[in-house]
Length: 275
Ligand code: OAD
Image: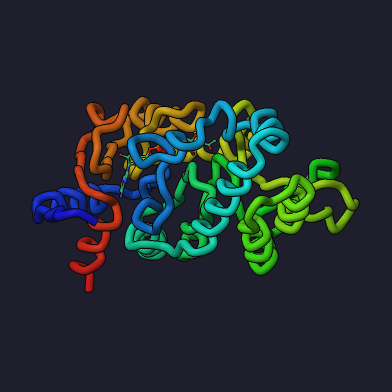
């Protein structure tokens, strides 16, 4: 990504913040997965530009798209599946997993649904917006993992040219089949617009935010509430805030250290210096 130079002073300052912390927490957003090939939501390259959230970010809108814009919906679904299935962790995910193993990181609070923190080895991951690799039964609430092979088959069905409504439904059901326990309908366990966040997870995340002495705010515009209370709560409780984001965000002016770089680029250098 781009001709970014990692300034030694930023690395030094970052290490300084880590060394003086006994309880650090990371708060991550779409930007940490950008270098894993997953587009962000906002900005010029963002998903919401081509697929407005008023239609594609909520259940009623998606139901309308199913009825009236099925080819576009099929394209979106196949693109999302391909992107998620092909993505793998980048140095930012790896560095966070290592900081948890070796200290002082205690938890990752993420708005991402791509599962990459877990794949990289992070153990305590609080997923505020759910996980696209998990399904939830709409009847009994049981949660189950997505079968990645089935998701691939669903993706291939979605790519059929001139897909019919029946074909689209079959593909979606291939990805989100019937509940193994009660036979009810399942849906991706992700939070769409207008839906509530998982209460327990949000409570734990707020507890972490008030408890930490250092919050790493990585790759998020920190604009979407309620998740965006996390950095504000941490600041109110006296934590230091370090931001890694190539662009200014709504929290940048309050950061104690701002590193204006892509997270993968910065953490690749950070990890390199450790070896
Ligand atoms: P946004 O798309 O709002 O913001 C992405 C942020 O990542 C921006 O501030 C970018 O400058 C920054 N960024 C881009 N590339 C980066 C890189 N390589 N390294 C570091 N930062 C980079 O995404 P979020 O803040 O995650 O919610 O958005 C929050 C929520 O809005 C999402 O979880 C989603 C969306 O609506 C739901 O789907 C419920």
